[in-house]
Length: 493
Image (cartoon, rainbow, N blue to C red; front, side, top):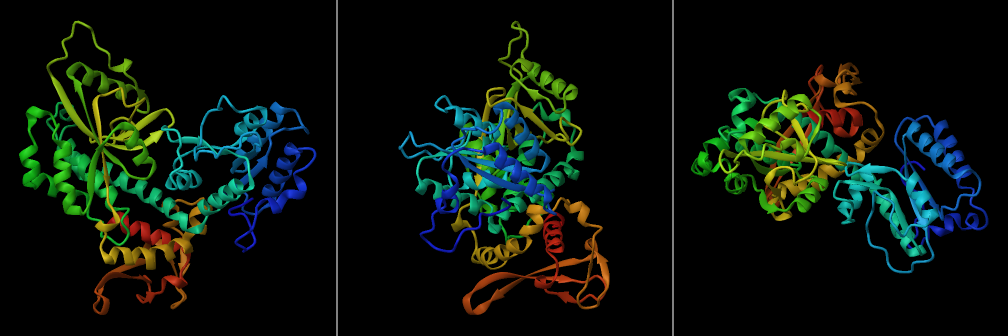
């Protein structure tokens, strides 16, 4: 199926009613999947992401098991189909935990194992899995899970189908916007002029501004997710931190950056943000929920040399404890220095960090470690905000403008294969002057206003035609132009 399941609009609707007449007798699972793939292949938009939900006992009886698995996986990959498998299990009557796995569990029988093997394995950036995380489902700490779940009654099935529907709903496209914005902002941070102000090799000795760069990065990325709040220039945030008295007082070279978290807590108050030191498990969860984490660690002089050498030879490599080993006769009590970085992503076999040494270091400014035990004294701070930290204007902007905007751009975000850069050279005809202009020449006008009668700050959004210079209603321009203008405004501010 593509997008949401079509269900009647009645509150007592039962999903079983849709397919009850088909569930008795043989299980032509392979044949059914092939027919579904055939239908997907005939669709004009078959190149776009689609979702196929398989509800079965997994007892394949119409084809060879291994061949069926191979062909189903091959077709799903070719047609870009996400497969969600729901295993019907009548043996266990206990209420299932809301949890997904990425390995076959010991209690899975042959039917469950087959369905698990053909279900899609996705990471936490997948729109479906991200929604499950938002609803407090538990997933493995490496951020990867198979879209497979066991159910044993119709109530559980209805609940699960409802959740899948919601994850594919147009409102959830917000997460995709967050992801696109985040990627573009990270690119901007890495290429900031700040990198030119110091020598990267000094950073490993605790002599640089890694703490300020990292704190600025998490503030910048956090603010970008607050719709309705003006996104400050990254270098302005950095300058403020460097000039702040709190930062100066705690910039103690003898402590090798160990005051990073203290500086952060003092500074983020100015941006209506909060911070809390968390363990590695909670840091991973924060990342999966969309929040980058401030991080700091320590290495001795010998380990720093190994650290730099490793990523010079293996820019995209994954650092392990073994890679940092040094001769036993070397005394590591002295020459220990700290470094501040930003935890950006949880990958299947690694943690990804944003460094402050420029795009020529590691993987274009990033580096990976196998787990949290590789670096000494690795600590994390979750940076977040709560609803009470938002102004009435920001809440109003989100509820009355942004959610509506999301609905109108969902089709583009979920189905278009174009990137933001691809859109620059697309054209749109102004509905007033009837003349075509490239997307990149249109202007998004964002005006802050105040409504006196109910004391609310809000933003009025318009679009200006580059030819006739007249204001255009967002309601009358394309979704593609809307998304292009909105994201680019965030990046340029």
